[in-house]
Structures are given as C-alpha cells and as structure tokens.
Amino acid sequence: MKKNHVEVWDNCLRVIKDNIHYQSFKTWFEPISPLKLENNVLTIQVPSQFFYEWLEEHYISLLKKTISKELGAEGRLEYSIIMDNSVNSKSPYSIKVPTSNKKDTKNPAVSMPIDLNKGKSRDIPNPFIIPGLKKLNVQSQLVDSYSFENFVEGDCNRLARSAGYAVAENPGRTAFNPLYLYSNVGLGKTHLAHAIGLQVKSNFPNQTVLYVSAEQFIAQYIDSVRNNNQNDFVHFYQMIDVLIVDDIQFLAGKEKTQDVFFHVFNFLHQKSKQIIITSDKPPVEMKGMEPRLLSRFKWGLAADLQIPDLETRIAILQKRLYNDGIEMPYEVIEYLAYSITTNIRELEGALISIMAQSSLNKKAITLDLARQMIDKFVKNTSREISIDYIQKVVCDYFNLPLDVINSKTRKREIVQARQLAMYFAKKHTKSSLATIGMHCGNKDHATVLHACRTVNNLVETDKQFRTYVDELDKKIKL
Image 1 (cartoon, one colour):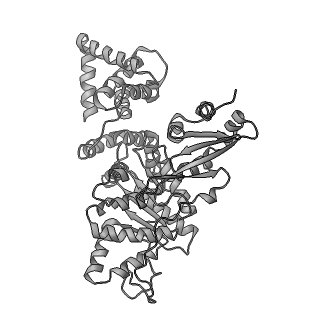
Image 2 (image 1 turned 180 degrees about the vertical axis):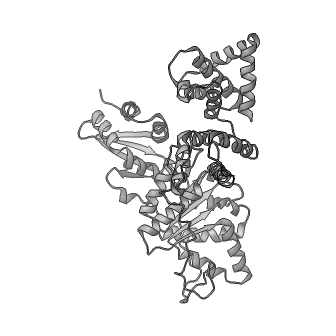
Image 3 (image 1 turned 90 degrees about the vertical axis):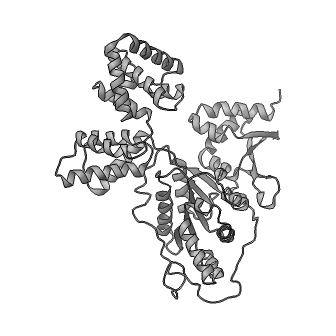
C-alpha cells in the first residue's frame, strides 16, 4: 500500500524520538508539519529559516537515515520555510529549500537602507570620543574579562552561547541576525554579548565593533538633537560592523529614539552587518515598542538564558576562583551554590564577600564562615527556595551525604530524609509533583503524594518527628 506524507513523517518521528533528548525533540521536531509526498520527496514545513539551519546543522545525519529507512535510497527531504513578511503587512509566505542548498535561503530584502547623509564627503563626528577624530577611532567599550573563555556553559544557556559563537565566527552572515538575548537580571546576557564582540575583534581585526547601552544611545541622541546634528549621529552608527545594544527595553516609550534606531537597524541589516540586542524580556512581552521595531527583533533568533542548575553554579564559582588564583574548600563552594540559586551576579558577590571577610579578619575560609556570611547576605537579597537547596538542608540536618537522597537505597533514615525533602519542596516551591519526584530520585508524582501524606501523619503522631519538621522548616526559610 502506498504511504502518505503523514504516515511517513510519523514513522520518522518515532525513530528520531528514540535517538535524541526529549526536550530537543519537543523543541525542534514537534513544531514541524508534513505537507506532501511526491516522487519519493517528503516536504516538511518548519516555522522559520532558523529552524531549517539548526536542523541542517545538528540533525541532518539522523534525518537522512530516517528518510532512507522510510523511502529507500532514493528518498529525499524538502523544506517549506515560513518567512515573516510583517514589514509589508502581509501574511507569512513559504519558500522551498532542498537540503543541500543553504546558501540559497538567506532572508529576502524587505526594506531599503536609509542614508541620511547621502552625497556628503567628510568625517562624521563620533559621539564616543573628542570631536574631530576620524570615524575609525571607535572604542569598542568591551570588557576584556567578559570573554567566551570565562563564560561557563550549561543547559541553561547552551542555545544562546552556541548561537553567539556562530555569530562571532561569521558576523552578519548567519540566520541569527539580529541575535536577541534575553533573561532576568544577573544571568549572563551582558557577558555573552561582550564575549561575541571580543571574539569578532579577535577573528576580524578590521571590523568595527561597538557595545553601547540603550541609555547611552538615548543620551547621545538627545545631545545630537540639542546640537542639531541628528544626521551625523545616525550616519556614525551606520558605519559600525557589529553593533551590540544592551538593555533595549529602556527604549520603550521613547518614540523619536526608536525611530532613529529603526533606521540604523534597517541600514545595518541590509548591509549584512551584525546586530546583537539584549533585553530583560522576549520580544512578545515588550511594551511601549513600535510594532515595526518588534517585528525586526524577530527576524533572527531570540535566545533566553535561564537560571543555572546546581552543577553550572558550582562551575561558575570554580572558574572565578581559578581565574583569581584562589583555593577554597569544595564544601564551601557547594554551600554557596546551594544557597544562592537565581542570580549569578549575587552568587559572585557572595563569593567576594567571603574572600574579603577571610582576608580582612585573617580567618581561614571554612563552612562555618560561609554560613555566617551567607545568612547575612541572603537575608538582604531576594532568594527563591529551590529543590536543590531543600535537599542540601535536609541532608546537612541528618548528617547524610547529599547523593544518597537520590539513590535507590531503602534504608529507613534515607527514605525518611527523601520524604521530608519532597514534603518541603511541595510546601516551599512552585514545582509540580512530577518535577519534585524527578529531582528526588526520579520518582513519580504518586510517590511524592505518598511522601507528603506520610510526613503529615508522622507530624500528628510522633513528637520527635514534629521537632525535626519544625527545625528544618526554620532552616529552609532562613
């Protein structure tokens, strides 16, 4: 019986799902739709050009094998890519791409460059330096320590970091233009933006790279209006090869500045110059921005940096200590990583506080010193209680190694510690029962519910156990 396109793609998905991580499957394959199957060519529709390039870069071998398995050696795959055409207020359209022709899939031009200084031949004032110096004397404003070498990669930032490195290797020539990095405060988006700029300067010394905060851009534009040289201001920015704008959300509500940035953006994008933008929220959640500007933010890739997991937090601290040539007991590093979970900047601040306290008072860096400092530090900062932190407190309380709480052992004291960790995780976090179970020995939600019932029953019937629960609750909320 002849197969149809849906059946073929479903069979392919079953094989793909068994060969890649579940989250990768949900991200990169669930959004794909099969369109047709003609002459042994399966056409699939992907949401964007970025999707196409990512599949070609990371999954092409797997795709070829699954297509060959389903359609034979003559089987072929064709992409139908949805292209955003919101600039002209038309609905998205599709282009077809064979798997071997990436170079034919660049975004079509959708707007004309605007040159506000056409026909003028003279040096353009540089808003960053003393007037009169030539345009190429641009200080990049990059911080040397914010390099890729010092940027610790983890599951929380892998996509953003990979895209950033790809941009640094080929600025303006990838599908990641603009590269839009977003996250909450203190999670590394500014570091990553600087790292890209530094790598571009290393790879392409002749390219002009500029890092500027949105507030600085606004202040310079106001100065240009005051001095009646807006055209020179715009033309200066049009000469940059890689423009990095930090905290773009501060342009919200400033219509004139947005209009100027819109022209700069258009010109640079048309000239295949790289644009990198950071923000505290994704484009869809931005308020006070012109729709035409928001649509351009979506042209490339919007990548988020999430809260780092425990292993990444430990690696960040170890990297900082290594760079500073300082040794610190692992138990202190681990305690810091467990105590401060939501902000890398605060994590490093706590580390500096401990080192300063040790140096000024000539005390050895011990776990007790760390506890004293963190108790003061955490009380003065907002801290979200995490499952990892709860497990650490419970294990410390019962003097158990941390790894046993996630083991399969059925020893009474370990089972009880695990149940208490589940109970407090349900009480103090917003995590689902399934998530709590996964963090506590890969148990299911029914096991978590049973643990919570057991703890509640023991609290009502066992005075000693009730004391454990009360004391642990106070320690967790400290």
